[in-house]
Length: 176
Image 1 (tube, rainbow, N blue to C red):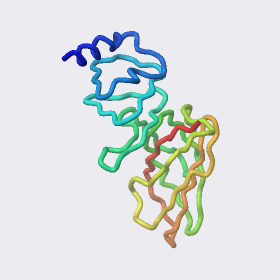
Image 2 (image 1 turned 90 degrees about the vertical axis):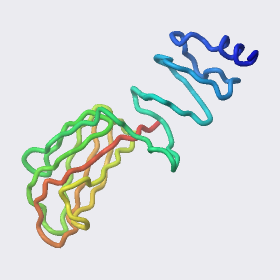
Image 3 (image 1 turned 30 degrees about the horizontal axis):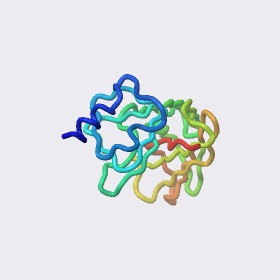
Image 4 (image 1 turned 180 degrees about the vertical axis):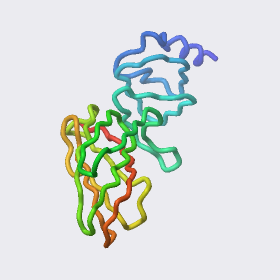
């Protein structure tokens, strides 16, 4: 009881938590309704009964027993107009791009720019085919990344001409 009372007394007011570490000598402590934390560094196992939001991304690693990492809300969507070469603008850390249904010849590829204000040249955009494509028909890759944009290339591996509205999922992994 004495130790619990001392730990609770040493926990600062939730409205003034700033700095680089919180209670570095307190193990198995519990904080509730903390509010906004600035420059917080925590080591060890962390569990949350609520939501942890990273305004400029969230640096984390996923365990095999967890739900993984990523952005659970705020994913954006955009439809590409005209043809598969046209650039799109989608400003967000994650989202879905529905490509135009223009033709893509067998064995060829098409590249287009994704304008995205959250991307910097140290980030790693990750893109996968989500739907509207048969397995083995297409491959997708990020070919370049720069401040404010990245380039996606879609390859036709089908052996015939195709014109699907391929849906791509993307997420931006923030770099240094």
